[in-house]
Length: 408
Image (cartoon, rainbow, N blue to C red; front, side):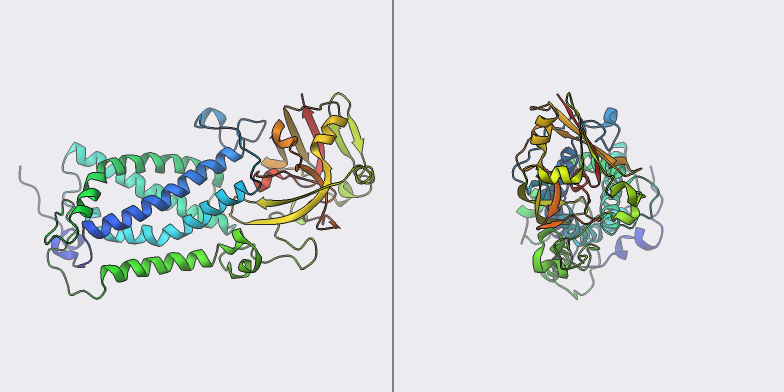
């Protein structure tokens, strides 16, 4: 069978002339990308688990279509979610220059002629297409979410989850296929005329203007720059001011409530009167309660220094004071609750209700917080009362609480 001649332009073997391309460079970039994206995939999965999708209405994706890989998310250490989600976001940014360099290094393969040489080749090409498209989708939408730039018309969390499933599956297949090539490339380093099964080495190489080491340095510098301009929102302290890419690097002020906030009171649609003197906390159980804020303040107050960590990668650690959830459970006649349903005054929003596991609700650091840093909560931070629980996603630290229902 006579194959048709390749079209002009990038389909011609002599079109790609960079002397840097080859199995060695591609293998190095691929190894770095595998390590980085592996961390992103694992921490993304852990973030999904931390939402406790098996409880109440916590599920972000359809429970019938969720992978059966969930487990109880621990409350120790208290900074666990802050660490895993901080890694997820910051490593996700770091790998962007590596991914771009990797795609550049294999560009000739994207214009291989003929595009499909056999059924096996077709399957491999389809797998690569799924891998590249899902990786670009995950990183692009992740960056948009960090910036609160929702130009897309779909639910970010749902699509990010399913996109991650596609990416991990495609990555596993790609690694299985390409691992022998990578091992061979490392073995052949420094050998003249290394084997080039993928046709990456230029047929007519141009004069080099940059060494491979220089290219890797350039990629590393790009990754470092992205890390420096974002990591401060996860680490906090003076580094927060350097997080130029983080929309929440700025704080509302210097007072006790001067720390980042995800949703401001003015955007919730809550009637101001609902958080005024007439506010009551309803506590459900065999012995239901209805308590005013003054009555809550009259109960024994406890303090806990705990972080709030959000899916966008930012976190802040503050000193909270309020009533232990376990003591409210005992007052309501449920000393050993199996779960706790928390309901906010917010009139809408998927997470205006959240369910906490029994061990989360009974942790001695889990509070119905009334004050922070020796001051009353501000409206933006959940006045008159909010939940604060160690190691849970920020959205599970419900603000403007209206009702707690303890289930035996």
